[in-house]
Image (cartoon, rainbow, N blue to C red):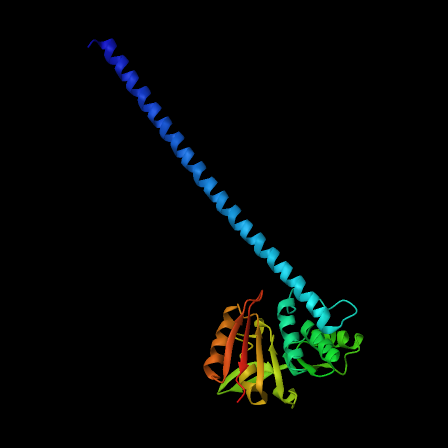
Length: 263
């Protein structure tokens, strides 16, 4: 093989090498495109699933609102049920429970939309009383004004209950002042306060403090039960009170229901 042939062979080898590298680059680019297309398809599937879930949730909430208008007999708009307020699904559950009991003595930890709606339900069926503990004067005034504007003063009331130190077995908690608690028996207890920012597991004291005041067939409802603190609270309550059965409801923010087994 002469020098020119060797040079030609070297040049051909280099070209083949370059061609191989180009093919490898194309394959890598194609693999990247395939991965991106797979990711886009996965995102699209997730988006479709989320859209369907949102549509189902929206439809269910419209159903809940329509049911609440029927249960309350409200002629005007009901209070808002978004943001920090109890959602339509939880509020409907509470309203139907009050109706099923033919009225109930309700105590709420925290005040707001549910206070007004349950007072409306009580008035509609002619039985029951709602008392809400509120540590924040601003929210207490708002809820009290809603009750008064709807003529519900005889069916619902807000107690200004500042947070204070409460001793539970040597452990100090910040909770509503126990001296301001109503003396009547409690048939339905809604635990939707104090807010989480007031301390770890801020809502835990509700059941230990109020257990002796609960009726034999009492219902205890814990809102925001999908949060870690509320999950821990529900577990502690269940362990300490075996006379209650525990149920988790698939509400938007999670709800745990403890139902005392009447004996």
